[in-house]
Length: 114
Length: 139
Image 1 (cartoon, rainbow over the protein chains, first blue to last red):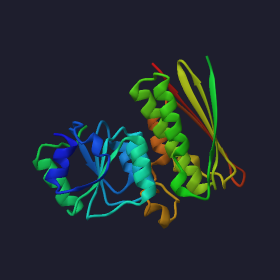
Image 2 (image 1 turned 180 degrees about the vertical axis):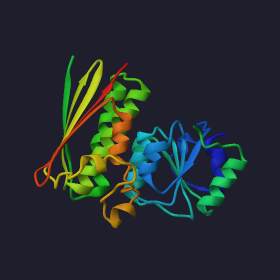
Image 3 (image 1 turned 135 degrees about the vertical axis):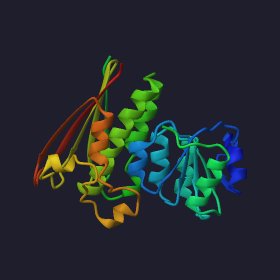
């Protein structure tokens, strides 16, 4: 699926990175613990998180992730948006909670990867 | 060809930790290192930066890039690590709660660095500081 599909499945609002919505994504990861993302995630392209700080974008960047979904409608600050723009990472927020958001994407075909 | 870079890692602003790793990542990509090498090196350095920001009030990172290897030396004047063997165990952490609320402090920093690098040397003196020398080989 594409990042635009992720947006649609999660009824999400795109915050930044509109130009990258046709990027293909195959795997996702849901976590509020960035150390775990850095430890266990491989070749995953979407990060779902309830955490709002610049380290979320830095972590995603280190892992070559292309899209961050903030759950429960959380809105990142300007500093986070600027960093994501600089790194070419799409930001969006969904009204769904973490469990539901992950479930919806899993049901739609996204997997957890290796 | 040898390239050397020096980075300052701030200790007073946790949100800026990772700037050096981000910059290094762009440099390594431009130099044509494989995605795997770039990822392993920058994740290790990022964890090192986070550690210096959390525990040591910041520090410096000196990176040397050769065609077949990348080495980063991270030096701080922090409190030092009393028991390195224990600090290397997954899940062992002395990070304060406010750091956990930022998504770190799970006790995965040093284990992650060990996991992603090909060589790791830790020298630490309690009360003086810590030096991490980490190398990723470019195969």
